[in-house]
Amino acid sequence: MKTLTVSVVTPDGPVLEDTFEMVSCKAENGELGILPGHIPLVAPLTISAVRLKGNNHTERIAVSGGFLEVRPDKVTILAQSAEKPSDINVERARKAKERAERRLQAKQDDIDFRRAEYSLRRAINRLEVIEEKR
Ligand code: ATP
Image 1: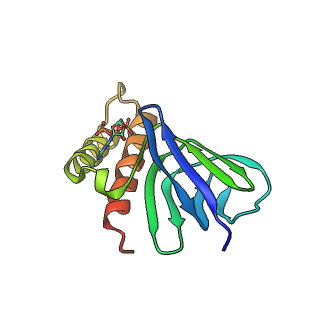
Image 2: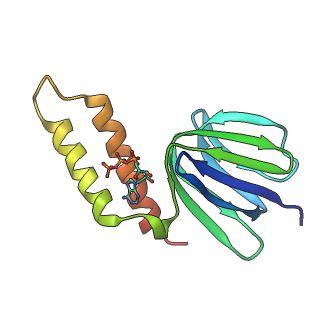
């Protein structure tokens, strides 16, 4: 079985580098499934889960947007933040979700709704990545 080297990088450093057989992710214009030999591609990612399937291991990573670069034998994901389920702090994500929801419900002019909406999406994505059963 052919494989792809996948590397996930954030400004804080590398999160993962390993070989897998398939990468599934959500680009801004739709879901992508990448197999070895895929044509070169660069695509913006949404706040979502990246799923990596290997021969006898799988991984999922919560990414807060970023970019996917595909070459026939390598996939690179550059994201502002990227966490494996074991690195996600549930309590922090729950608090971030509640904070964002409060801001979105407030009837104040000085609230940055767009910022609160993105914060809510990041928190929900983290919670979904932790809770998802394999
Ligand atoms: P918060 O309001 O809790 O800071 P946020 O969505 O604004 O959440 P980000 O700006 O996306 O946070 O991320 C800042 C840094 O904190 C990144 O390194 C990210 O990986 C990390 N981070 C954010 N939330 C969590 C979490 N729930 N568990 C683990 N790491 C987290």
